[in-house]
Length: 331
Image (cartoon, one colour):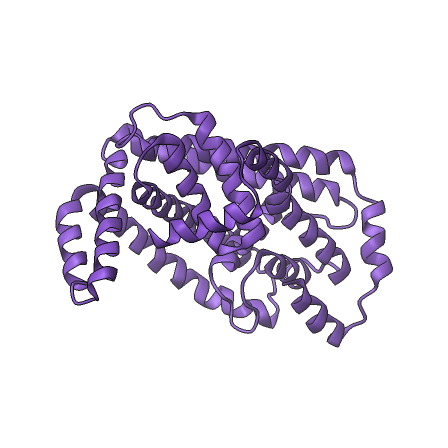
């Protein structure tokens, strides 16, 4: 991702490596270390939320086992990309002795709630940008023009899906399976198993208390992410000067850019981070690149050593993690 930044920016201006490397010397490292605390806290929050999804199939799930699988799972995502997504539900299913399909359904539910929260944060970012009258560069004009409509439609669709799953699960199941019934037998059977598991997983959101718990854990997760961004901004204070509202704007655009491919830019948090910092806040590209690197390391790479340690402790290695990802995706 950062190769795009170098190629596009160095075509316009000279990239000063001395400024980029010198930014590390001026960092307030105590804030960098502090930023690790909230980002690690998000994994515990995710484990608590996943436990709510588990209750229909496992009355008393183990938070410790879910947390361990969560850390190993996110390590797999960092190492293997999207195929690593399936490691976490697979490990949780094996540890808690429940069907893998039920945990794939829990993963779908988690993605739905994460996407909803990301869109809400982005909506706040858009409102702040419009209210402040900030000038957006040409690459971000599309985001402002289309972003509001995307957020409105996407949030409405997500809420509609949640409503259908919660209150009209069986009719929703029949209609969905009816729409894909003409698919080949093997593929239809896989979809049927996943839909049945999803309907069963939604049982966890049928009670108001469970639904409130899921929303509460989702909010806590994003508050912790914001705290990580804020701590990193404090670490760069004097080089990249961001207020709390600026941090929220950055987080909103990054969350949106990580999900939606922006024309002429693409996705990925590093690219969007650099883009927003340079075009929206006027930060030098060298400093913006340093900030983006640290943000990526904190939110993705920092957990890898712990995940590898836990994986090795449980008898997993590089090849077994890749195999787990393939097996889980084929079930």
